[in-house]
Amino acid sequence: MNHKNITRTITLMLCIFCNMLFQAKVTLPNLVSDGMVLQRNQKLNIWGKADANEKVEVKFLNKSYKTTADQNGNWKIVLPEQKAGGPYTMTINEITLKDILIGDVWLASGQSNMELPMRRLTPLYSNEIKNANNQNIRFFTVPQKYNFKSPQTELGGGKWEATNPQTILNFSGVAYFFAKDVSEKNKVPVGIIHASLGGSPIQSWMDENSLKKYPEYLDEAKKWQNDDLIKSTESSEQALSKAWYTELDQSDIGLNQHWEKFDLNDSDWKTMKIPGSWEDTEGSFEGSVWFRKEIILTKNQAGKAAFLNLGRIKDADVTYINGTKVGNVTYEYPPRWYDVPVGILKEGKNVIAVRISNGSGKGQFIADKPYYLEIDGQKIDLKSEWKYKIGTKMAKMAPGTTFIRWKPTGLYNAMINPLINYNITGAIWYQGESNTGKPKEYGDLLTKMISDWRNKFNNKEMPFITVQLANFMEAKAQPVESNWAELRDQQRKVSLQVSNAGLAVIIDIGEWNDIHPLNKKTVGDRLALQAMKLAYEKNIVADGPVYQSMKIDGNKIVLSFKNGTDDFAPAAELKGFAIKNAGGNWSWAKAKIQGKTIVVWNDSVTDPVAVRYDWADNPDGNLKNKTGLPASPFTTE
Image 1 (cartoon, helix red, strand yellow):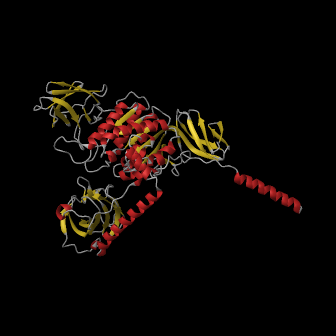
Image 2 (image 1 turned 60 degrees about the vertical axis):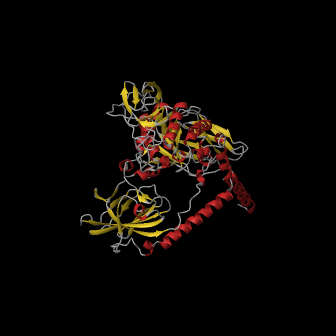
Image 3 (image 1 turned 90 degrees about the horizontal axis):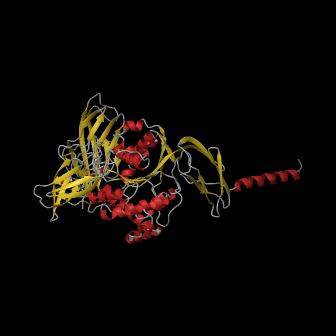
């Protein structure tokens, strides 16, 4: 080949290479990816980006669908309805997507009780986790981000994951048990798109238009559109926090003298029984306090792996055994579950040492939680006398934090709006704890959010199921007002007034000392019951007794309940009822089942005007139907 031909050949190859290099590439949103679950029995949106006017072809189930990207490079193809099945393959131009299932897709959203992952529930559901291997349950966890400027169209992260013993650890416990139940009952794959963030109020999940009635929320959202403000706020707060904890550590004599050491002489330390608060004896203070507990182990127990359960602690802890760190938690809510590796425990004397730092509020080992060391299935009770000594007292409490990520519209824009092209069956919602400060507005906010989400997902009757807040905090001896009760009632009213909305009542499974009750399986199962009724039109009992109306009969009030929910479980004594007299005072009341009604009275109240049931932070009512589902708290007012 002569020089001229060689040059022509090289030039031609370069042209072909450049043409391949600059040929438009289709890009897809993270949701449209390997392992995805597509919604059965609905027309399906497949969308993405390309160069302007680029031709796009989707091949799926032996059929081809074509379109052309618009001037902005956006394209969308609508596939016809499909039946449940899979796994399938889809090609979109040069991209091949594998392991696609068709089934039901649910959006799971809310705050920390929805977010709470299975790893936090390990002691309750260890067998569930160990045996998890289900290709028909898949999760897409939405990255936790916010944006106050505008609704976003891209997530910028996330992937579909099938259930196995590793992936399940990061799955929402509530959403997992919901998905498992729905999948088993309907014999179809279930995909969960999980978009939650601990501590978030409802207004952070709403768009600007839905909040028009609430100018204070819109003003707040607008304020945080300023990137410089966000940076300066975060920077200054981080500096203040770092300075406080640096001072704490530098002034803590326990750190300087290594009070975690096995052979420390702690003979002059004070003692107190755990659980409890050192502030009951020492007075209120912020700072650090150290605890030590000596236990004696047999030769057979020595050297083995173990499990240390220190319940819950307010606030942060670092825990050691025989001078070796076995774990730490940086804030008050997570349980203290620490695995003790082989070789740490020894025959005879062993020392558990815990350094606790508390920045605000009452420092304590939380009551009514388990405290033990477990070796070979044998538990050594640690609810006993411990030695303690103050490490340092700080002059002021730890600096607060502006939780910018919770501000109005931010989570909707970044975590919900990018999902709205994806076809779903419905939504499950576990949120409200962060709105108990202003409970009376919650019903309106929730109604507006449901309506907006339905519009955005282009499904006016999309099933929407709310988890009602669980019982929480200390019980009260007398009937009193309760923001938690008011918010529960707002949730109840929305479920009755909004079409195709359901309510999973969990007033019977909360924990008075924990805002994150661990029984997430019951929550998921009750959500699934509601889903079976709303989304799958099953003729089943999904609700406990649902209050409908009242009438006054002399000194008694007779309550009627929604037909089908009035099959009451017998009870020796009904609890949780209060009655109001004409003067506006509430008193505890007696109640009895009378056929399909409940009769309520108090012998000292001759002029009753209203009844409340389970109207408290942490009520003890026991009204259920014969399937065991509890009645929602309610008021007749």
